[in-house]
Amino acid sequence: MVTEDKDETLVVLTKPISLEGDSDVYQAPNLVRRILSLFKNVRPGSDLTNFQAIQLPPLFNIPKSHLQCYGESVYAVCEDLLHKCNSAENSQERFISVVAWSISLTRPTIFGCAPYNPVLGETHHVSKGSLNVLLEQVSHHPPVSALHATDEKENIEMIWCHNPVPKFYGIKVEAEVHGRKQLKLLNHGETYVMNSPSLLIKFLPPGLDWVGNVKIHCQETSLEAELCYSTNSFLGHKGAHSIKGRIYQSSSMKTLYEVKGHWNSIVTVKDTNNGKERVIYNAKEVISGLKTPTVKDPQGVLPSESAAVWSAVSEGIQSKNWDKAKEVKKAVEEKQRELVKDRNSRGQTWVPKHFNLSYTKEGGWDCSPIHTWVPPAPIVVPL
Image 1 (cartoon, helix red, strand yellow):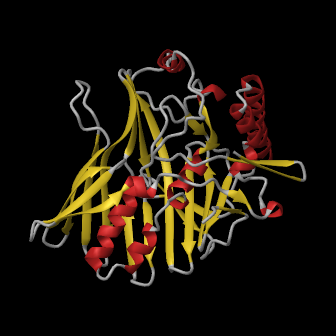
Image 2 (spheres, rainbow, N blue to C red):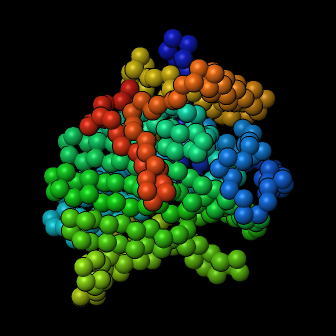
Image 3 (tube, rainbow, N blue to C red):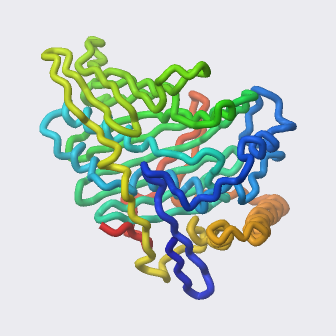
C-alpha cells in the first residue's frame, strides 16, 4: 500500500491484482453463505445493475475502485505488448499482436471480493513511461466508465466504453460487459475494435472465470478474430480459463490462424498454411510481479481521483477496521446522494468533464474523448 498526504487529502494506492493473486485481501469466513445472503430477496434472472438492495459491505470489497481495475489492465504490465503491436512487420503480424494484447486485458479476480462502484465523475489518471491513461465514471445509473489512453511516442490511442450488466441466476451471477474497445495504431492508419468477455461468478461450486465470445475487427485490413472464453462445466469437465478461436480474412472467411490456450497461462496460434505453432501470449511474463503506482505530483492529484475518493475506506479495509470502513464508505455514498438531490432541485444535468457520452442506435452506450491527447499524470507506475 502507498499512502500520500497532501493538504489533508489522503491518497491510497494498492498493488495491482496480478497472476499470483493478492493474499492481503481479507477473505470472510463462511464466504459463500455470506454472499448468498446478499441475494436472498433477488429473483433469478434479475438485472442487478440498479438493484438497490445489493449494497456490498466493505468486508466484500478489495481496496480499489472498478476504474482502477480497468486502468490496471492497460498500464499494469511487465511486457510492452503495445510496442509489439506497433512494430510488427506486416498487417497479419500486427493483428496477431493485437489479439495477444486483447487477451492481456483479461485479468484475475478474487472470489468473494469486488472493487468499489465508482461514484459519478470519479476519475483515475496514471502514466507509465510515455503511456498516459485517463478514466472517468460518465454515468452512475446505468454504470458507464470511459477510458482514454494515448502514447505520443508510439503514436497509439485507446478509447473504451464499459457498461457492466450483472444478472443473477440462482447459483451464479454473470456480468456482461457492454460497450466497445478501440485500439488505434496511428502510424499504420489501423483501428482495431473489440468487445469484452463476461465475468462468471459461480457459488456452487465456488469460483469465477471469464466466459463468452469476443470479436476483434480491423476494417482497414479486413482481418477479424473470433475468440471463445470458456470455463469448467457444472459437472466439472476441465476447461477453466480456456480460449479457443481463429483469425481470418473477412472478405473470404478463410481461416489464417487457429488460436488456443488459457488466458492465465499460454496462448498459441497455428498457421493453417504450414501447421507451424507458436506462443503469442504468456500471462506469467505479462501480469506477474506488477508494481504499485506512486504519487509523483501530490498537488496534481484531483479530488475526484479514485485513490483519493476511497482512501479512507481502503485504509479501513487494509487495517481490517470494518466499523471504520463501513462508516466512511457510507459517508462517500451519502455525499453522492446529496449531490444528486441538489442537482435535481436546481434542474441541472451532470455533464462528464473528459468525455462525450451518447446512446447508439444499436442500443448501447458510446464515449468519445474531448481532448486529442491525455496529459502526463500525477500518479506514475515505476518502470
